[in-house]
Length: 218
Length: 263
Image (cartoon, rainbow over all chains, first blue to last red; front, side, top):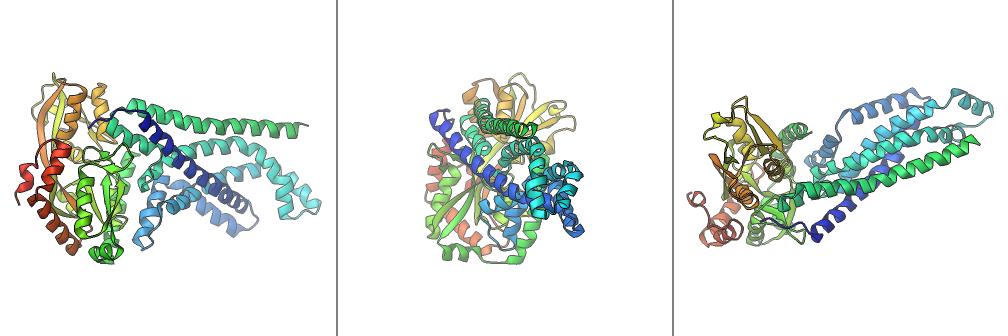
């Protein structure tokens, strides 16, 4: 019954990582767009918008991603919507990432001195121009480290999607372990592959931070 | 996280059960009109369910499913499920039936309907040769590894004295690794898992006492009487014509156990 761990098994692990990458990209893109909307509404003048976003953030930060995935997939199926697991993962990961990124970026927007907004208003800039040219560029600089920290964490959290049937890196590791009985080797490799995906992210972050620091130090 | 997953599976399972009983559709008709049966099976439970070298689901359960689909005159779609999520998969209708090494227990029979048994496993406590353990009370103060949410988990939890520590792992393989590496002296697992232990470390571990002999059934959503009757007819057929014997020989190295023969 025991199978040797060979090149074939290694390939299976590497191929499984493509699901990790696909899911991470979905989460990054969905969360990036959603998070920006959440952050802007969270700092908007409208009280209704602010309250709605606080509720959204509390709900999705206060419940486990595992449960969100579970409900998005199995919960919707009960009501007669047979959801594709990919759609379910997309919904859950986007909502989860939007809540966190929205709150991170809200903090960054509010960290930009209020005088900047007032000065922009005095110059007659409207909301979009003010955000686009004055507030967001300054907020972006302080947003890089916490954003990348969250994205790295999110990439690893995609392993939770195995509950709705994705055979991504971690799950493939479990499956291979069950036939090869070599957990140290398999999970060691799984960890190394995760590292190979996360490290470039932190490198990009450092590069972006340097670039932005140069832009403001001039 | 593990406790959370279990709690979640129970909460959602109950919800799904209620919803399932309201739906009241006939799955057998659905399967026939669709022309495909979706069968949920484990892929991390060799030799019953595993992924072969081609990364396709294989094993005892897969072979049974491969006989079931043509018997119903439909195509087979194997859906890999995990121990904790297999019942939600069934109750939410993501799969039509589970051929997922699901041991028939009274607790599980409350949430799913079981067919006649199609497979059997003996579950026992195994451990290092020098551990003097012959009955559950001897587990006092000992640490024992099990695969979480498995039948052996339930069995060990039930008989172990309060001073015993039960270490729950994600799979038999992980529990086995804990035993091999000396993190735990004892393991609750099946005869199948013990075959692996003997291969990896011949003569170092032996059987302490038997917990139960567990029969496994094909599971359907509660109230699916037509589908269940059809599946029982199928199981009777493969028991009678020797096909189930062949599957037992192929994966377990012995003919169909006696416990499956009696009605």
